[in-house]
Image (cartoon, rainbow, N blue to C red; front, side, top):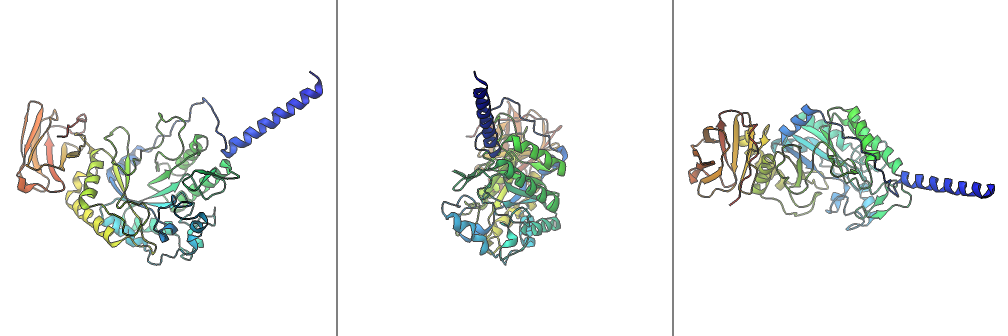
Length: 447
């Protein structure tokens, strides 16, 4: 081989290597590596326990999209043309918005924390960010919604958390775009987008914290090579902050990412070895929709009970209107939930799920020597369950009333006066001889 030929081939190889490095950095192609992903940094155990004890929070999806009545993020480039969607903020002036009102509603519902969509997949920011002009301060409203809501929550004794979409279909550097994150941007630069994301997350923590948690969403091509260092940065900024399992796309789905799991629009399965939180809408759509179908009080309460019984939290979503209020009918439903919790909250707050695993008919929670059995269906007042393997000292209805019980043959049999049954949830309070916390979870067969 001649020297000139060797030099030419060397230049060609160098050019190819440079091109591959560029494509990798922009997220156009993915690196194949067998290198193990960095381990997820353990959360502050006390912070995790405090959050689990809260059990019930308010999710809020809101922004200029409310002007259309369509779904936030997902309607961009689908139900609403991109150019129209991206200019909605120029008309967004929710003059009836009052952060104190929102926080008061959450408090009246018996909720313990509030989580706001500070930036959804559409890229619009509800705070005074220095990273982009595509934010609330450049709308006619010109007020920092995140700042006002964080302050209102503090006033009401509510914890405040920030939803932040990991993907951004508006930002030119994020490789994917609308509709639905399926299109490809002409000049992606994932490294530049990572710098943008980090700067915004830093703003949220330092300017509006301390935060209960960061609720990331839909990471798509944002993988561990960027996400893992970002999470370490978050932990350094606020050591006791919690982070969900959508911060980045995990290279190995078998390895747990995040401090807690996030089943969506469904109640999670019983799981007491890894925290979880169901996120669910009070109506059908996340963002406000005119005349959207709303859940009944029975559906709302039984969802909350099923989450607590499965050892999970419920993050219940409302979508405020274009003028900045939570619909009156939704407020009334939330207040009904709050009234129920005022009487029965000891069976939800500060409890762990079990020992009986939830079914459509029963759920249970526990703390100390006490077990709370939630009967969601018991038409004749007769209930048979697998025995706890521990002596039951007393059994009473939570709000007074006798309950006959018998432990025999591996069964716990209950008899309740049918007149004392509640149509939504009859709660029985058992006192055990010894702790209820170390009773292994028990499967129930639904009849």
